[in-house]
Amino acid sequence: MTSLPAFDWAINLLVIQGMMGAFDTLYHHELTQKLPCSPRARRELSIHAIRAVLYGLVFAAMANLKFLGAWTLAIAALVLVEVALTLWDFVEEDRSRKLPATERVLHTLLAINGGALFALYALQLAAWSRAPTALAATDLGWRGWLLSLFAVGVTASGIRDGLAAYQIGRRTHAENPFARQPHLNVLVTGGTGFIGEALVTHLLDAGHAVTILTREPLRAAYQFNARVRCVTAVDQLHREERFDTVINLAGAPVLGPRWSARRQAQLLASRVGVSEALLRWAESTANRPTTWIQASAIGYYGSRPADEQLTESSAEGGGFMSELCQKWEASVRPLDGLGIRTVVLRLGVVFGPGGALPPMLLPYHLGMGGRLGNGKQVMSWIHREDVLRIIARAISRSDMQGVYNATAPASLTQAEFAHILGRVLRRPVWLHLPAEPLRWALGEMSELLLAGQRVFPARLLQEGFEFRFAKVEPALRALIKN
Image 1 (cartoon, one colour):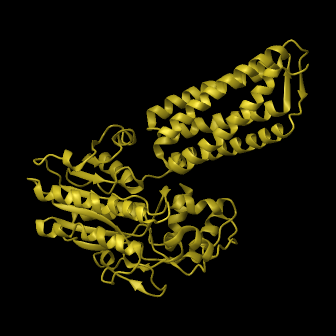
Image 2 (spheres, helix red, strand yellow; image 1 turned 180 degrees about the vertical axis):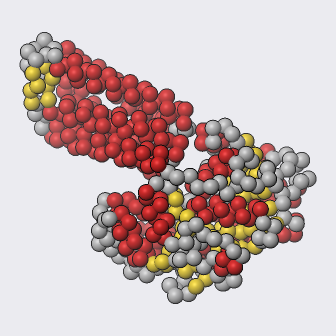
Image 3 (cartoon, one colour; image 1 turned 90 degrees about the vertical axis):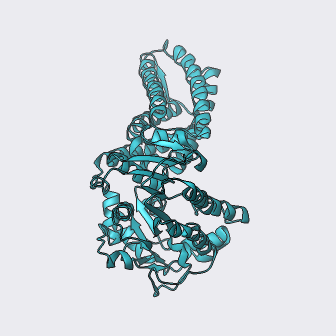
């Protein structure tokens, strides 16, 4: 039986659906929302897994087969199940997270386009239903090849989401380091970020009261199931209210757009500007906090030789990252004069289920792992779980004060890291990216990848802190297993 013009339009719309869906998956689900790393997205990932595999069948079927006679009922049932899963997915997304505007608009376009293509396909199925029952091959030319490629891609995406949901379910939960502390009233900035989300969740689970300073209160409400109080500006904090501890993690990601003058100003404002506003509040409040925990970074030391071990007493370095960290730390130095015990944590690269690690893992998963530049640059890192334990320790121990290097004791070169990661993932390590193209593409920001510093947590070790993850291979195995 010949195809109707409606079928040709349905195929064209299916191609558009595939392209929009691929963009939605890569940009929203993977890059910006990082759903595979989010524990609260487990049910959404499970729905995505089933829906994507069925979508793969739809793409493959429409690209290669005519469903004649009774077979029309089978493909119609598959489409109806797909539509039902899509509606369930919409409900689950609205329940579990705040969708960014771009994702909401794209989902609307996908729904409109999907409704149109399935309506047009239904006209063709009605015509095919009158033919003798059979499956017949169809040749759609380049569109058939492209839809078959989409079928493979969306099925792979479904498998990826299914594995992510399974891994989230298997994650072992470490002991909550805030569970045995007296009740705390805590003010947190950066509470929706990679470290902040885990910190706030642990504090809430331990029964503490948390206020978050955030520009996205609705997102925070979704993240923490409306268990937090949100303020969008420091002037919303009342003069009489009391916080036992302030934990200042605010700061835009340093790895992103090139460090133009405008971008550098944004990075400074997101750190120094927030800290200075909080400082003004601390000076005027009637009830000053007892403890202030301030984030900084090992970029304070600048780019240093691989054999130079840096402790808290080492001198600052040069370059924009060092300048950023110096100003960040200087912005809260007046707290000492207010009688507030201040702990500054110079954080290394933080590993966990999210943050910097997943982008590092991706090339290795694709079999394209290797070193950057000469591979001799030193990576000083720390597991997110140890960061939370250090913060809990800083709250509870009145003898902790001043600057601490928040890095694991065992730093390693980037080439060593690549070798270990390849061994853990059982992937080849062969692709070596030269330094010059990275410097040309990223400018001064390339120093984040090509320069390093061997930072040692001297004060933490002297004071008896025991790292749960002191070496990188056990940390990576625990994170990848989970």
